[in-house]
Amino acid sequence: MTERAFPVADAVTTPFWEGVAEGVLRVQRCGACGRHVFYPRAVCPHCTTGELAWVEAGGGGRVHSFTVVHRAPAEYREEAPYVVALVELDEGVRLMTRLVDVAPADVRVDMPVEVAIQGDPRLPYFRPRR
Amino acid sequence: MGADRVAAIAGVAESDLGDVAPKTAMQLQAEAARSALAEAGLTFADVDAVLSAGGETFAPSMAVGEYLGIRPRYTDSTNIGGSSFVAHAGHAYRAIEAGLCEVALITYGSTQRSQASRSLGRGGGVRGTAQFEGVWGLPAPVGAYALAATRHMHEYGTTAEQLAEVAVATRAWAAMNPRAFMRDPITIDDVLGSRWIAEPLHLLDCCLVTDGGGAVVIVSRERARDLRLPPVWILGHGESHTHLGIASMPDLTTTPAVHSGAAAFGMAGLTPADVDVTELYDSFTITVLLTLEALGFCGRGESGAFVGGQRTAPGGSFPLNTNGGGLSYCHPGMYGIFTLIEATRQLRGESGPRQVDGARVALANGTGGVLSSAATVVLGRD
Image 1: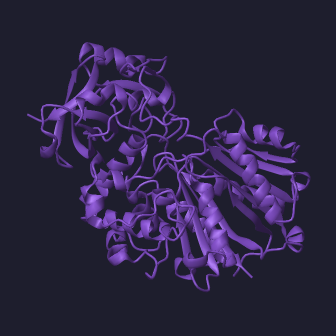
Image 2 (image 1 turned 90 degrees about the horizontal axis):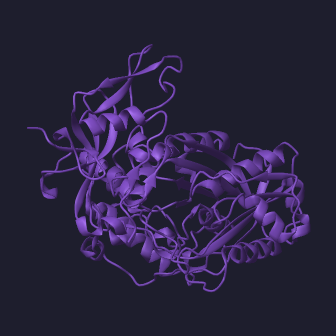
Image 3 (image 1 turned 120 degrees about the horizontal axis):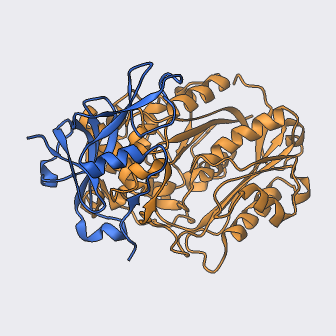
């Protein structure tokens, strides 16, 4: 059996994963154009020129889209069905996640959600906003 | 037709398709290349440009050149996923136009079925920009297309039945293609009753996993004079990409075929209404709907209604994926080259019971990655 996938942090992404370890969701924000950036980068893809700084995200967002996975990769087969979603954070960036604390049949596009860091490996899951 | 006649498809061929064990991927490419060149009355010695992608090897154009004894003047291993070969056709056109080569060979081959090399995910440590998407158990690539399908349904009310129309129509074309892997007719209920893979996509919304290879030979106007078969002219081409990972797709319902299609039509001086037969990469049924909209065959959000009533099936008003597509004919991982092969045969009038009567203009569109890249060519006959 293949082992579950886990992120390998690098020089740019380490602050993100350190935040996750501390229970905090961080994204980058450009000092020049003010826009938020995710995934973490070495340069701002919006304005080219600005320096990116780490900021704590509010943790809220909405489900932009989702799929209920039935035919899972081998290492996740026993967990299926589960919900993988794209969440748009209130800061305007989109990220991939899994939804927890909700039945797959109850998930809707545009549903408000909030971050729920958990698991092994420790990852930023999301659940319905309370 | 507006574009100058600069370069033409002179030969096309498939290798063995389906389950080809114990053949190798390079063997498939070599067989297809020999057949495509023979159709054009050419040999390996005539080839001065090699273009390839995938093929389960490092630097595929080098591998093909070495295997076939070709030392090209122009080489291209551009890999933008399954659309690569359609992009290669555009690159070959420009290289010929610039005088860099005269006879370009595009190849692809894969034994993903017989080698059971396809996987939905790999597990373990995920590095680079994939570390944020590769850790959630999203089956690759179907899960990403499912995310696009959910969004299209949300925005436009597209239904599972409308997606199924594409699978049913494509199977009807495959039933007339002796080389198609799946030829038994299916119904919309069959599609909706097939098991879930990643909602809202069922098993029969998904392409096949087969072996197979293909080759396309593109020659200069000078060389095209001597062909045995009618030349199929490249009238326009375009390519683009908008993202790599699905979370970075700017708009989940707009594929980069918006850009590649506009470029190809603009160069050709033609519009979607001028196209007689259309060959689109149908990795999943949703891919077809999104691509029809992106290329302008229908308006945004209208593709579900557009494919209703088996409009794209044999006898329908919009002949689409007339070989049976990746959904039913063959899908060896990077399908794009087969859109070129079928479009060429349709324009030559060789497609037998599948022939679209009087086809003069064809469009081939490849999609790569997770709706990440697109390449379009508009083809025409004299």
